[in-house]
Amino acid sequence: NAGVTQTPKFRVLKTGQSMTLLCAQDMNHEYMYWYRQDPGMGLRLIHYSVGEGTTAKGEVPDGYNVSRLKKQNFLLGLESAAPSQTSVYFCASKSGTGGPNEQFFGPGTRLTVL
Amino acid sequence: GENVEQHPSTLSVQEGDSAVIKCTYSDSASNYFPWYKQELGKRPQLIIDIRSNVGEKKDQRIAVTLNKTAKHFSLHITETQPEDSAVYFCAASGFPGSQGNLIFGKGTKLSVKP
Image 1 (cartoon, chains in turn brown, purple):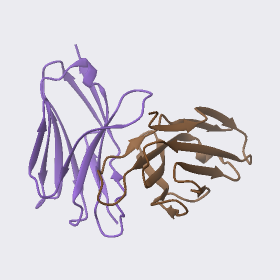
Image 2 (cartoon, helix red, strand yellow; image 1 turned 60 degrees about the vertical axis):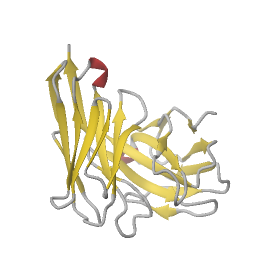
Image 3 (cartoon, chains in turn blue, brown; image 1 turned 120 degrees about the vertical axis):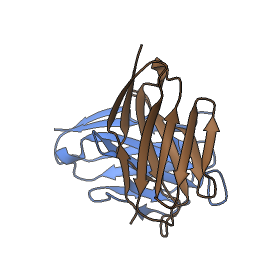
């Protein structure tokens, strides 16, 4: 039981390049989330999904896209990376409505955009 | 929307002393308040949470108190140990339109000196 995993762990991009971050969970959770963490800013929600095939915008969605084609996977895409997107990205998941409220986080992806 | 303020941003205590971290929230409809601990380079992990129908909750050396009237909640750690050193985040959820999403405070870096 791996919980929440993220790929890759580290990545360096040049401005304008694209990439996809993969989040996978094996807990059969309905809800999945993408956060970014910047020094002194806490965790800010980028996008989230309340079930397979659904996505919604969070607090800071600009410059990112997401997809949830399979229940266990949640992908975060950067189409044209900018230095302002340098951050640590965390994925999280939790049970659906009526289940426990705890969000389980992945180990994070450290992204640097030059 | 909901806004969560967290104080202090840094806190240094001697081993064995108590530590208190306070958070205020803006939306009186919020009804779920978790606390996450993040050790250096690691993922955030839930340490305790409280719902709005409860005023206090304890788990060994940690406790959380909630004052709904004043819209603030606090984390109390007693008999602090060096392994308590980490960044602590409070969060709020349950406000209208939240879909269970968490709004996080900006974090408190706790240092416990031996």
